[in-house]
Image 1 (cartoon, rainbow, N blue to C red):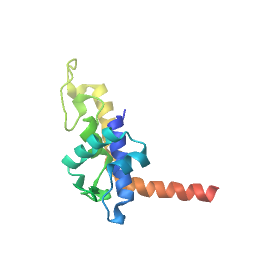
Image 2: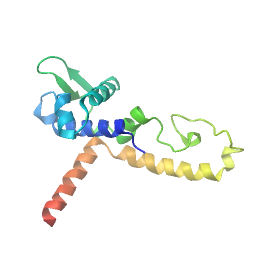
Image 3: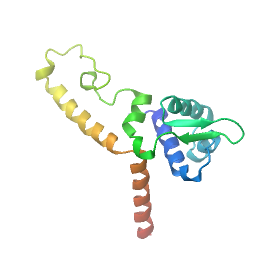
Length: 150
């Protein structure tokens, strides 16, 4: 399950992506208010995103946060890994956090592992294909559909 930290990080990145063309830094308080995220919790998340290279910040009265990467370069998988660790549901199929399962007799013939390897591959492909830019495009498409349905 997606943690609140990951969900809030994605919402914050989407908010900054939506407002990046204004050319101004985005205040944490503004993000917190618009995205309904607890301010103190958001500050820690934004710092993690900055330390991971997704954001940069400017201090002072006219300070705030900017994207350090384009919305196309920020995939759901990289954000989720930052806050939640492995994408895989089993440690024996994880790309970055591999661990052998204690009860496993033979990984090469384990049917459970084979199924969870397929799940990992499909999940990872979907998460990597969906960047902040892709999500914003999807939102626009859904809004268009909704407005034509009304």
